[in-house]
View 1 (cartoon, one colour):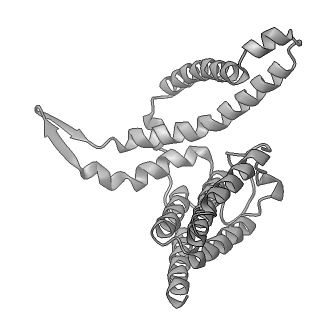
View 2: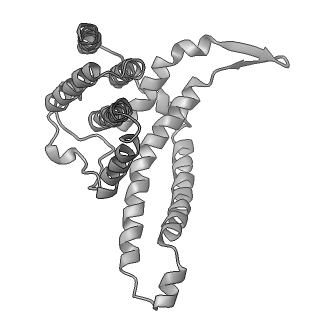
Length: 254
């Protein structure tokens, strides 16, 4: 696969200027609708909408990753397994594949148009109503750790591109190693070597990241960044609602 960009592509566009929570709500709404009504009409409307958002975000075409051959081979194998069952099974399988690619594309759009530093505050603000849910156990009041969950998600999204980059470097370094004997090459496992080295590097980076967060005031600083929706966000959510209504209308008419 070509280099997958899982961080913000710095472009000045209306999509980039939206609040991070607005984009998450939009992706969640469309995904939820497609989950319950995975029809071709809704899939078509969602595809057109995502392409329009991509063009509005002014992202370069090189941002879109090219999947390797084995991904498409897996898709064809799945189709070959479902084809003998029935035509409806094959069509349902195709809907699942299209839905998966749409969900992946929507997630990529959020990553390409949103700074990673805005993810945790947006998640904390969206999950703020959950903080009211509390219970008492052994005389101690407990509440849903919304801020902690937001920090975990944000750090995971921020660390994933670093992990992918480390794996690329390790793979390139392994290719530069001198060629060993055929017996030695047959006994070793490249995948295990790369995964082991990646785990070691990830542990070291996690320790460094933890020390940096502690030095800067703890995880509370990651969710304390100000951010709130504005008029543009209200318009964007209205457009998402209209797209969902349009998809339902197309489903009813068809």
